[in-house]
Structures are given as C-alpha cells and as structure tokens.
Length: 131
Image (tube, rainbow, N blue to C red; front, side):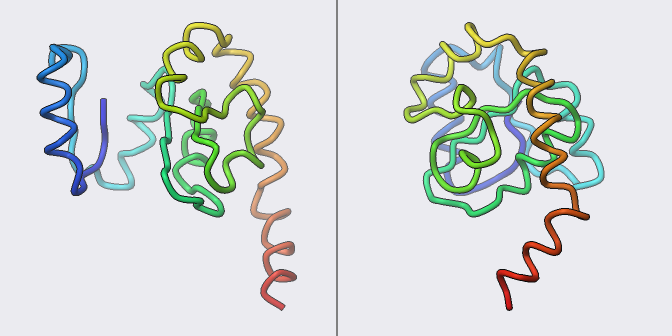
C-alpha cells in the first residue's frame, strides 16, 4: 500500500501497471492523520525512500511507534536513528533487505532506539540547539 499523494503519484501508478504489479500494490491516496496508525500497524515494513536530507523524519517515528519495521534511505537523520542494516543506498537494495532481515528483531532493536527520541529526552536537546 502506498499512502499519500504527490506529484509523482501518476508516474508511480504507471510504473506499477507496466510492471504488472497492480494486483499487489494499491494507492490509498491522502489518509487523515488519525487513521495513519492503522496503515502502519497493518504493514510488514515501512519504507521511506527520501531523496533529500530530512533532519528528523516524523513518518519514521510514527512507524516505529506502531512497531512497524522500518527501512530508510541514507539521506538525512534516519541514519542516526536506525541501525545500519535498516539503511539503504539504492532503492534496488530494498527487496534484499526485506528478505534477509528478521522483522521482529528489527522491531525490537528499533524500540530501544525509539526510547532515545522520547519527547522528554528530545525537547531539552532541541531547546539547546535553538539557543
């Protein structure tokens, strides 16, 4: 399931159809924020293929909070949050990572990292950065 809309949606839909994956991949479009956790919870993996260096990726934390195993590109702050094996350089690396990583182990390791980014811990650090 691909959640969200954007300028590349039409391109992605065409790519899915031309690859004969339209029976396996669905486009959900815009989803209200209060319903996102349902999508995260049902997902086996959350994949964030950012092409620009986002500092702290909110969607990554949302996925982690629902105990959804995450994979992210090596752009931006995700590489500081996740473990090395959860980071990919090229999108072609994703299928191999999903096949070879133990999803439950990934979630367990994520949970330990998530504690480091709780509001109680992160807010004071952010205040210092802004000062």
